[in-house]
Image 1 (cartoon, one colour):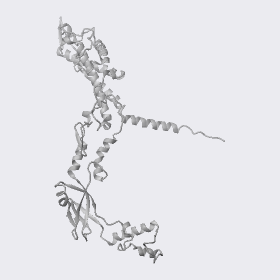
Image 2 (cartoon, rainbow, N blue to C red; image 1 turned 180 degrees about the vertical axis):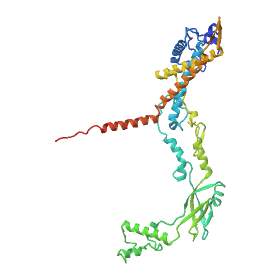
Image 3 (spheres, one colour; image 1 turned 120 degrees about the vertical axis):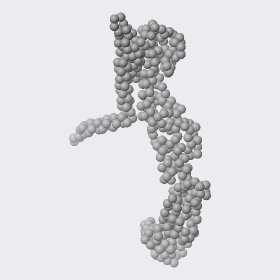
Image 4 (tube, rainbow, N blue to C red; image 1 turned 45 degrees about the vertical axis):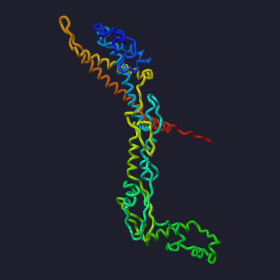
Length: 408
């Protein structure tokens, strides 16, 4: 940007504040974020005049030009917006993660729940429990032979069906027939055949094909309990031992049968987990589908943009003016510190560059601290704590109100 484009020339006479600044035109500020902002264009020249007068003009020369003041004013607005956006990111990150980055949420009211993101993270637990999740359970089987107790499921199934991939066994279908199916089994020790039940109930001699026998529900419950106790005490329990995909069946099979099991492929679970935790600013793949929409992943890609000066209220503008003044002191102090003493007839003049820089830096730190404290006072956590305290105080006040008494 040439100096001619902002309608002034830099010479010895123009190295000091002349008393007024030029109009805001495109390119006069370093970044140009607010060169078209009507509120910024109106206030920036007034802010420059206000700062110059507070720095001692016209009693003393101010070694700043209008574009120096405008740069400081732009920085003050940017700093205010950055502090507000940083607070909003911290306050809303749990609600925003997983949302698309294509929507500008600057100065938007964010309402929602972090539940969808938490459910996505918790889906991995659903995989382990067999209630859903990101990886489907598969089913396999093998032939259990008479008298053979141990089987290597990785060799029998993982190395063949899954091409050598590591499998994780989730469930083995190896248990005794349910007691409810053995009530009328004469070989269950405590079960009853149809004829025995008919005799017990006084219906001997009747054909069970043409008669219906109804027994109370506790009859079935007691017989099932008796069968289960009989199996527990008198028989070997149906169980298994699984270590490193090596399976041992109990009791030792006494006949040839097919044993089924549920499993997952380990690398499928790892790939799905990586898809969950890596979904963010980059494209991601999960459950076989590809999403081409970048999502909010962390602090770095939350779509908060530069806040327009015209959309900032009076409280924010006053903070900006104070920060602008502190930044002007730092810039002016840096200039004056280049020439700490100036010779004058019979003596020399000492400039206050160091003091101005120190004062401006302290004021900026105090202003940022104050702004952060005010923002934290409006956080979701603080608001909920205040509402809870108000509700408790209101309840205490209501408890002190005497109840109405009715006298007959």
